[in-house]
Image (cartoon, rainbow, N blue to C red; front, top):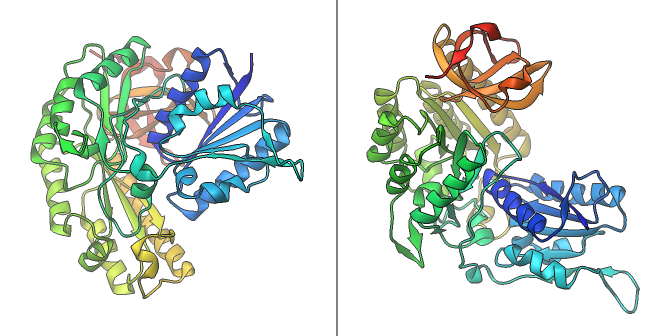
Length: 447
């Protein structure tokens, strides 16, 4: 029985796909092991949102070669689709799989498991299984299982948005989705495995409903169908574009007992001019309206925001537009990304490049703002009761979990609480920025 290990870089969508591919390997008779358990095969699922993600791929390959120099290393994911020939030159890589090929990985490996050898140099030669991204037309169902307390359920893939900084359409292809029937079927399988929370994920999750280039469903229809599935305790939307976050979705979430009061809404910039240069599909006022609508219906709702700093043309004045806009919004936290030049994107050829040092400075300013926002949000909920899903994660002797509105909670470790939903009273914020709760004895069952 060959041993196979997996390593995932990047987003929740990658985790869902890695987990599904891993289950396929196990069904075929392979034994899944930890990365450092001397596996025969290393599968590395890559990201390429930033230059740093590319470097991480190389580092993971190096670590794999230290663990088992004779191990077979296969690379898939976004980086593999964008730069297959470059990856093939990395010492230790045996095979590269593009977007249209990664779900055929197992069949290909069964036929071609032995590394290819150059007949002249006798050195290993990486095989590249790759098609143009236009050929990535099929939709492949995926969800994570047994990797974390929460399950990431893929409902959509690809993206049709032409954002000038982004390589994802080139790495994953056009927007396409599963059927509502198939997503509901997957949700029932996940519930049967004992999972309490499902996180809906995709490249552009709110664009759910496109099949064969035609819109057949809407995201809100999927949400309403999932809301009826028995046994699901919580459903969370991983990220949704502001122009796709309709009043109907917000109003539905507000009255749903399963969809939690938490949204993660990419902004990227609070400067109207930078939004235009980025070719985002909304204006700043629409974003503010979405946040206002959420808070009117769900005052306790957690709202996360993605922001890019240092985009070409972002002057100090335009950055301060973003800073001040975010400072005034009733949001809960930020995910901040310094702009990273990506080949073959429009932004690479734009003028007014912001120095890397200045990008770092601006990112630091927004991260400090994020901590202030998070603390303020947590402070508003002290002495209130919320339901926490406890995870199998220990930090400085404490076990951690999240409330429905995404407050990170720390409690005294108790193995009986793992993957359990408990209603607790918020007590105070600790030095690590986590919400402390009353002693375990005061926790009572969710009713």
